[in-house]
Figure 1 (cartoon, one colour):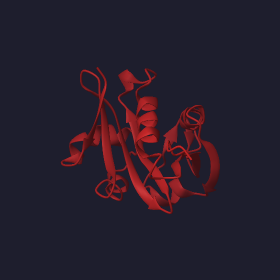
Figure 2 (cartoon, one colour; figure 1 turned 90 degrees about the horizontal axis):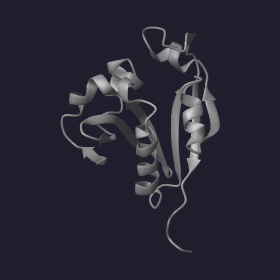
Figure 3 (cartoon, one colour; figure 1 turned 45 degrees about the vertical axis):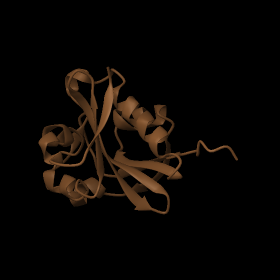
Figure 4 (cartoon, one colour; figure 1 turned 120 degrees about the vertical axis):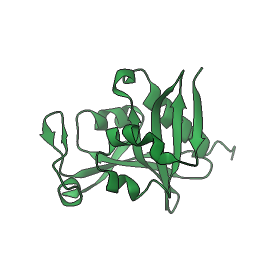
Length: 154
């Protein structure tokens, strides 16, 4: 049975999983404590996400990762669906910043996100080593957004 659990203490216990989505620990340290962390448990933790309140009704996914042997089984999508359901009455936009990668951008687009804006050279200026995905060096941060609809009847 799938359970999504909020982690409020000892978030670094999940560092190996966090590093799958953000491979530099000091970058994770910038948002981990101020963020809310959730893990998806399905006979063991399979996936995690960290979200932050960015103000003005914007909730941002800072980290979303699934263990490699459990990818492509719907766990990350289940976490995104949980966030939409859980926070749509309190936030107007769910956004994510990610590398312009053929792995991650299509995933978010399938979840209903649309491209919003780009932060040029984010990865080359903020990481101490090149970040590769699908054999390509990531340079720019691509932001995607999903409008959240309140479930309240108008």
